[in-house]
Image 1: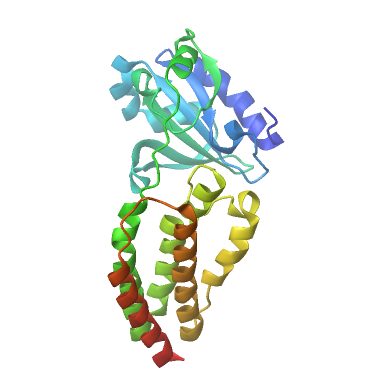
Image 2 (image 1 turned 90 degrees about the vertical axis):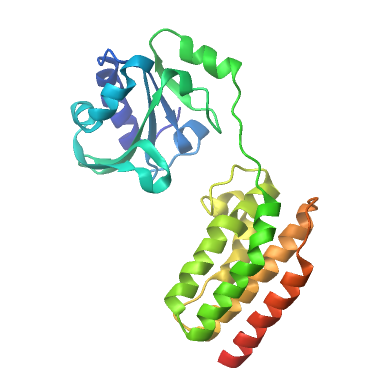
Amino acid sequence: MDVPSLQSRFLSDAVPRIQQEARVTGVAVAGSIAGGHPDIYSDVDLIVVIDDEAFDSVMKERLTLISSWAPLVVGFTGEHVGEPRLIITLVGPPLLHVDFKFVRAHDFAERTEDPELLWDRTGALANTLTQHPPASPALDLQWIEDRFWVWVHYGATKLGRGELFEVISFLNYLREAVLGPLITRRVGAPSRGVRHLESIAPDEARALQATLCGYDQREAGEALLASVDLYGRWLDDAEAAIERRRDAEKLAVQYLRDIVDQTS
């Protein structure tokens, strides 16, 4: 692995210490390091694999264990991202973001992409990766289409009220949940919101700039209209076998245009 020096030093120091914990059966790294494209700003996504019968006890001691493996500055659990097994930390100095994900050995096969094994006590984890390929959930375009025009109407009401912080937040949601995933689907990349779009899909990333705005009602309206336009174009290009909500689209877009005209 070609890893920047700070991240490499952390792995060189921490992994041997983790190996000393008898309840740990293996350590892997995921994210940009495993994907082969880390840079000096990359965090470290560690997977710490625990003996099944010891998992509950380890979960109670995670911060203490991490403190023995690395110079912990601060850490907290990852319920806000839907992953209570995760401890999100800063270690250092120099400061480095490290995510420690604790998983049972029998859950190690459940993944959307392959990690890089750093240590495997018995060799069982390597066998698991070989026998069980990763499974990435497909983007549910029908789920999005069923909701998109309600969302557009919602954004238009916020624009009409002049609740521009709400509109700006809503535009960010559309990029993260709809437009970014549509782009990664177009280029055959894993869906991670808008992460790495500038490098993996530069043309689409430039188009996405039209969905940005400052704290200005006119700009916000134009950004909403640009979001609708990009959604329609990229969904058409996807040639997906879904039921398009054309009546809802027509009414929601007209409602939005009326609001934009009133605020121009």
